[in-house]
Length: 449
Ligand code: FES
Ligand code: FE
Image (cartoon, rainbow, N blue to C red):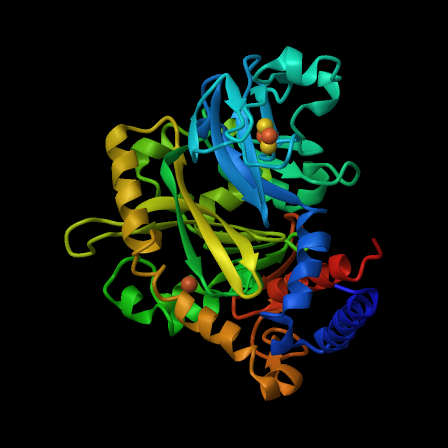
């Protein structure tokens, strides 16, 4: 691209963003921010490089030598455990000529050998040698030609994150108030969580922001989009009752939403059966975390930019099987303008019976698995929105509404005596979490680099 068209594109991006910024103060967005090639490129550079990205879970690579292949935007990384037990995130590019060195999605290996000319690396990334080394490379400074590591890697309760910028906030700082809520979920058991099965992957023609804002706090869509699934009784909480709860802007663009009954006489704990609740070590939780967990029915959230999660009890077969809690954790990996590869993991607390894990997995697969009753619903409007964003007239003119719960629209109000982290609204007929998401999006996108 020549310099002139490059600067035309960046001023076009700037114009879209500045207009969006003005509109967002009024709770308005516009369809033009979706599915735009220039915005997408800027997002990869400004949003995904600078933030913490989820890569894998400790339990996916339990043994030394274990590895999985993962992605941040359009870059591929090997996430592995070295002989010292250390977790590394290594760019899957051979420094000789740039071929990919990892040819499987997962495995166990002490070394990686590039298929092109055979440069061979230890699994910590060091260059060990190459075919006909003496003749070909005698004198090469091998230390300089190892594999490239992600600049920063941090692990939170077994969840491995990487950041592609050397400097910036730590994972904990970046999670802000969200770390408190995640800590509440992950600390319920001393043993933490483990992955169930393989992550599911599938491609949909949706802008990543639509999925992220949906999980940050769009409980409202359940009443229409998921009504048919809901009506067959997959969950024991009536729809309107389920809207009783909080939307929490957890800082830095993160949003979390709880269906909750803080006054409940019986402890709820997401409806985990008593034998599972017995395995929880409630001393791990602060008094306030315990108060929240005790009244929780459903928790759904998005960690900015594109990591979403959901804990709730669902039944795979309402007439015959009671709802079982499940935990889905997903990444909306952008793979092009208006296109994502969905990565979907299911987790369960480690110290539970195989039978319980199986029933949680069954509930998860039948509802939020690739062919799940809920999972199939969402791409329909998401893809339509993404497609509509390409309309020549729509792109320029179509404004969208994000005003629920602001300026006395609707019934939701800010909870003035909220004693947990973040800013909360009650009930969940509210779109403040989405506005919070987009505010952070704009901060990143308008940042000088
Ligand atoms: Fe890897 Fe040549 S590109 S050895
Ligand atoms: Fe949905």
